[in-house]
Image (cartoon, rainbow, N blue to C red):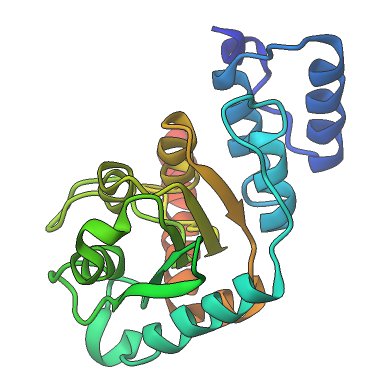
Length: 230
């Protein structure tokens, strides 16, 4: 695998960008695993928008585009839905998330949803249920990268794929190591267009408590690992 040839100690984001760009320019088919590996190496150092651009830069399965004022409007609606509940009182340890499904041919909302409580279906599932068959071919606006793991509920990235959604706009990248780019990778692997960073500031700030907890757990784990090596 190409990814295995990249030194793990590379951590300077500027070096990672240069390495990725040089590889992309020298080859028309940089291996997807290498793209993903570079993406993950800089996942804690670069902005969401740049991370997403690096991840899909050399992908021929999708095209990223700049989001429009309509995209921002629908994402703001998803953010509004997410804030129906609070992290502290309702969703903890899960983040608050909102999702809006839109028919791109009419620009009309066909489904909405939010994550009401830990253990219950996530925002994407509620929106897909509301949309029914209209979800096929729709554009999804999700405030946080769709989860990609199976816990008390199924993976939302796969639910979006199975429903036939064609385009997904994501507000904020999910730093939870169980997701951390995996949701986007699943969508991209199935040919779904992904745009990350739409209303990123708002989508990030509303989940500040969640992100702070994830970062605290990461630091504690790293400290424990260092201690175990001594």
